[in-house]
Image (tube, rainbow, N blue to C red; front, side, top):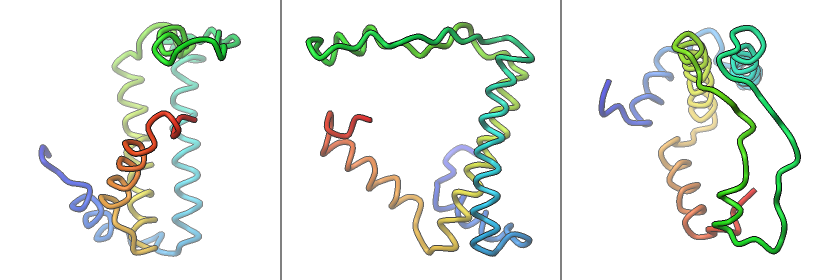
Length: 131
């Protein structure tokens, strides 16, 4: 599947989406897919234990430069995902991409264009795009 473009994937999704062609169905399936991604990540912590979390207040202050801030901000994740958890999360992310593509199809949006516009916005706004 090397070289698969977003446009090709979007067309593939359009061909495969039969049961949930309603916008409401796609929106609810997209939300369900997002929840499943979250659940898979959570299970990596709570059931498998390949990763753990140690969350605390980020040591951010206004006096730090951007580079200094990047160096000290933490992900709160310790460890690395095991192969089983990588597989589970990848499957759920794939479903999420499927329904994102389906939503774009139903609204006649091009996923490539959406990605290009967001990338351009990130490039143009730079630091002002930080959230």
